Length: 174
Image (cartoon, rainbow, N blue to C red; front, side, top):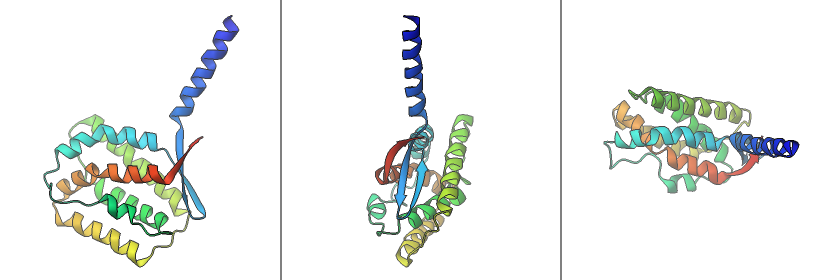
């Protein structure tokens, strides 16, 4: 009886651990990258309400869902690399919160983006002119605003990026 309970407990523990390391594989042409979307969602959910509450630029939108859906075939890798670069270099470096827990979560999210960028860098993505123009327009809208409100707005719009990533990927366990 004790062995059976121990065996069941071990199985439940392993199942629980597998959910903790669930990742999704993004297939971008000949390249694949693992992304821990569950982890990204967890960190994002901790800072989302603060970012949205601090968004005073209601009429401005950086990332529209149609913009992301219209990424040309073969440009997913490039678009993702450029969007991650935008978030790491422009957004997270300027996003501030007075609450330590939110600072930790935004740092963890930024670090996760850096890690994904590092993996994508190995893919040697080719960027088309249209994709580059799209991301350039994102930067142009960002710099029209003051830096802190722009960073809050961009963090508030991260949901669009995460939904897109989840739509591109397949679940795997590592």
